Image (cartoon, rainbow, N blue to C red; front, top):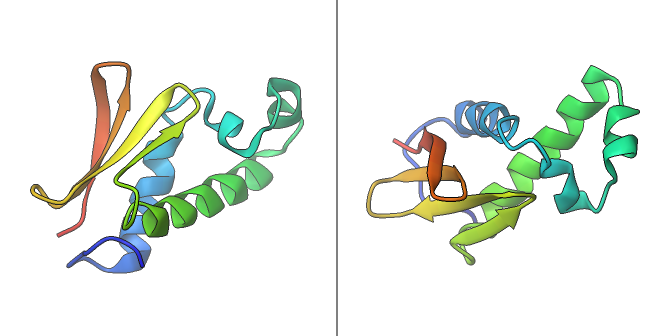
Length: 97
């Protein structure tokens, strides 16, 4: 289903992929170990992050809060954005409009 958006999907996906890089242990979402993550080259890491961003974009349409490692990704429909938090600290957000 995905989230409602007014921006170009590719732009949102690119911004969300970059935002997910701020979660230091986001690889846990895929049940990877730190060693497995470190074993990936930068291009492979980027591909994993892009896949995660795409999965999250669609999943947030039905589940507005998703745990990703030590972070939380939240679809804030009222502000038209996706918030990325670690604990109580907002790391960044991705605008959907």
